[in-house]
Amino acid sequence: MEALSTTHRCVAPDLRGYNLSDRPEELEAYAPEALVSDVLAIIEGCGTEEATVIGHNWGGFVAWHTAMDAPDRVSRLGIVNMPHPWAIARELATNPAQAEAAPMSACPSSWRPTRGSISQGCRPGSGIRRS
Image (cartoon, rainbow, N blue to C red):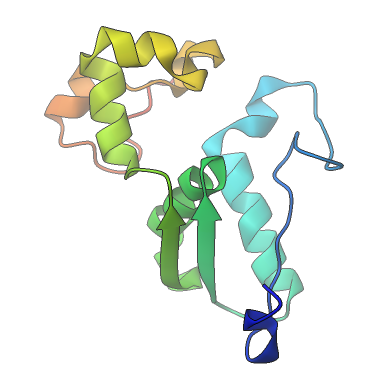
């Protein structure tokens, strides 16, 4: 980040629940929509309409969702060590070993993809089953 900061404004927040960030107790506070809203608030807080968003690991998941949910706010997207959410949804819905091993298996079932969402082409939002 030091090298990038000579030509770019760099912000590296901790996601909710990590390091010294807030740790809300309710699970819905960790839903993709809530995490995307955090990223959008950071972009807005920096005084800009859009940003290059780069995410690693779970941050990559959030970055993917930010770009899909608010494409007008993400000028460029960089992802490290995280497949596209549709690929994740496909594997979680069709591969029992992946579904069992995924950290998402501890999340509420309303956040998990369903086999039906895969047949719908995993459009944004279609991979989430709401209760």
